[in-house]
Image 1 (cartoon, helix red, strand yellow):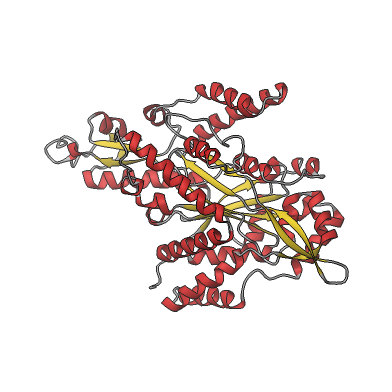
Image 2: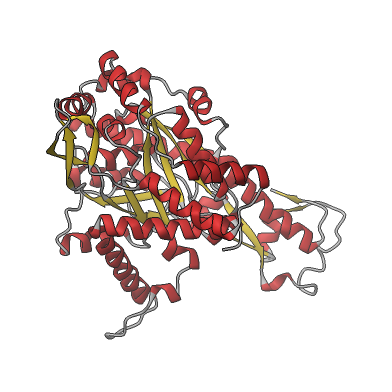
Length: 471
């Protein structure tokens, strides 16, 4: 394998998927369910009748079938900074800051992902990466967590050496790329032997189940790997039809004609056998619940204005639901009703500047059709070019995450309730502290989407040989 970040990322994503499939067979079943749902949806959209099965891979964009996002939970600054180095070799960079204390978790996070349209089109593999906020733990639990984390190393010596080589030389040989993948997988592999005693595990779990998941094991096992679908409502129904332990509702915005942001569902976490050391260093049998299967449907990226409207409506829904004790279907009915306020057509999202878009030339943009614009010394408005059908637009896909949706997924898969939830939820965000642990600033996702939009406009301007396009 010649060194190419997109290729390396694709190979690592595939290897991780195969490993997780062997560890959690239900994940493989979920992939089949998603394929079946997409096939039915494509068949319906193409108005194809009869028994002929349509391969959705022949219709959907190439990135769709290979698209995955994973999630890992880390404990220390060293772990976070090193995982940043590993993902950087694969062309994945920290985007966004997520304060999970809002959902009652003593953690904050970023998403490592490609940050250009070209790289995303090649393979959009992303990993939602959380790290413990030690200051939100009680003193006794914090001391126990720090002691356990100091005694582990989640990276192989060879992986660390390969990262040094990649950073100093700017590339890896084909054999080194293969080594990077195999050694990198060890960081994410499941281990059934805990590094803490059963008593220590119960103490960690009592304070918060996620603390136990982060601290109790020799590495940062991946806790889910998520395929993308084009119809998550159908996937949810098919999961139930196949007897999968699906959660009771889909997280995120309601179903819409123009999907926005991110919708997610999952099958509930598996109870897995784990062996803990007792006081005599013999292993005793126990169990742990952490790994689950998740599915996502990605909609359109919203501008700051669009996101502010989304957040206002969602906050109003949550306040009203809390006042009336609404959950499950009654909550979803309220959500759907209140989100009627959010415009649901592509033209409205564009004209009201609620979403981000890329622009391209239409067939009418040849010399004869737009000669009045070519070589113009005067600025031309974007609206003029759209009205004259010289340009068209396409919504940009949302590539990031929603902290409250992630919280909903995590909560549905926890085996207990935090004893320190009030302390956690009263905490302030700590972006500076997170970036200090990371060793780098996180990118602003809104800025990245705006860059994509502006880059497409500049490409159109150059092709049309215009002086300026006024937005």
